[in-house]
Length: 156
Image (cartoon, rainbow, N blue to C red; front, top):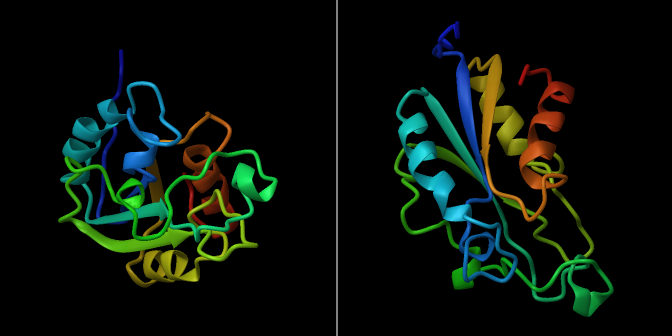
């Protein structure tokens, strides 16, 4: 028997990197990546606070193969690939976090190097975070944000 999870006013949802470049047709696509959009939209209506992260790289970002990194060029600031997926409902998002915005900065975690997310969660009395989104492999962005959350005093 499954016990339903109770979402309270002290819970937040963090949407991680639901961007065009991580969806089919993008520069670094997740297979069936767009399939997360509808469930995330349904979930977001249950939370008092919703935040969203996205890669927002300069053209010479260190993670790109062209700069000696492991990844193809993706999510370049202002490009169509860096935009949220068109069907993602961001109307409930109150905090938008841009990650890895400097050429030498790497950030897979929505908390690392972006103090505004932690500050906003604290200000709203958030005690627990839920995370859903996309990453090119299961070792990167989506699982890294909840790992960063406990270090910032939240359970995930």
